[in-house]
Image (tube, rainbow over all chains, first blue to last red; front, side, top):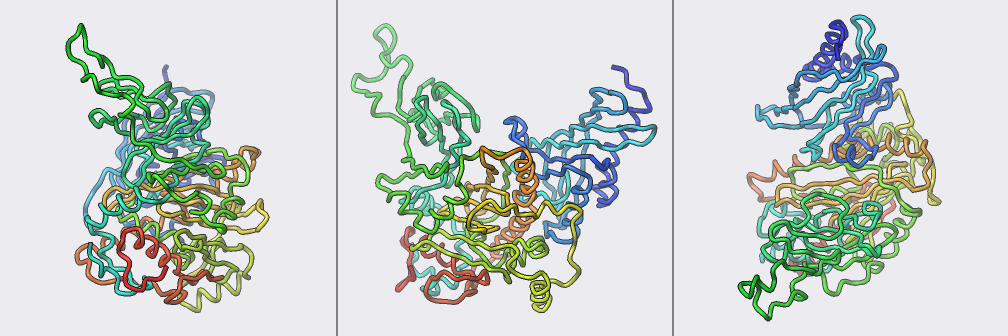
Length: 158
Length: 417
């Protein structure tokens, strides 16, 4: 399948930027990676395999994604840490009209404030991305988590 | 066993060493998890079809619970009678029988040994001794009792009847929450690096819910100013923490939390309030209840988020919590979507539960280097273990320790029961 290079670039930029926004703690910019009707689900691989809908995080709209971040900033107490997303190359599976389907493997290394790191999370992003010229936004991001026995807690988005 | 563990007979002091001592941990496996208790194994809805099984844990022992081809539910230890190999190698599935891959010993759903390859040898050579009896070598089985879609297992040969083990108050509340056939909506799993008993204290600690979890007090899901309480069964081994959303005025509640210097800034607001909306579906009108079942199970209702939790102990310093979220089989699409949305409140990323993982680890870390000293459990009063109509109350935590100590054989002189 040949993907127009402008689409490929826009998709890859969104996938990379969105990961960097989390690692840089620029979560408002991360929220803006989603369309207004964009959904975001952190889905244990076990639930995916069993066809069960419950996620670890499950936001059906951008408004709800924003609520998650407001709670994180305002109400939730969690383990102080830094995240580093390590991404694979992004594989574009299909492009239909303005919507590209892409998948990208990820690992997240989490480091505490004493400088001790652990492999926190491994999985794959399954994205549907709307591309209009240079602008790309998530219509859907499902982060399927292979390592769904979550150590301690999962506070910041994946 | 050290009998002077407890500084006070009413369990209002909890020695920090109790979260760390490896010999206590070993004894817990024997006296509690393999003792005269009923452990919550799971939901019937997890194994709906004949041949379905799932692996769970009783303490740290892996247990397979399953539904056989006659529809009966069974449970056995996931360990081959021959050489001790794990039999079920997948965490769940649907099978015709249970065959150990090592030497192909084959078991029924009830754990009876059905076949041993080449038991009589080949061409007159080898094989088992003539007096080897297949019937004598089944798997270690658990007794099973069912209640409203919950599956309980016991290692005891003579456990008390489940209904009397649970007691009237727990039965009444489970009956309301589990009032209709259940449908499983998904799993959430979390590993917390803290002793399992810290978690079982946490789910009995009525006091912390609106202090640790700001989300609770912001949206009135749980506030100490509400009509609420913490009740126990007659033996004080189980507990139910409950409240009625809307039973306090926002202004009064917010003033109380500001006056006691809990809330030090503005409250947040949500774009979409459906996350905290309680669609009333139970007669009592209780909006949140956390039902903790000794030793290791929980059934929760938080607004319309329904679930059970089971724990796996992984040594003195680690506990795994598995949340099984469910709805009712007759829920419409809209209600299912509402429950899936409200599942955001629980699990490892739960808006009102993620903090628990952190709080437990804080205790485990800070008490580890020098476990001398005791925690204080006096909210709600000392002495007798009583039910109170308030959540400014930690008495069910003392109830847990009371039954724990009875089973462990470490009760202090004049112990409260």
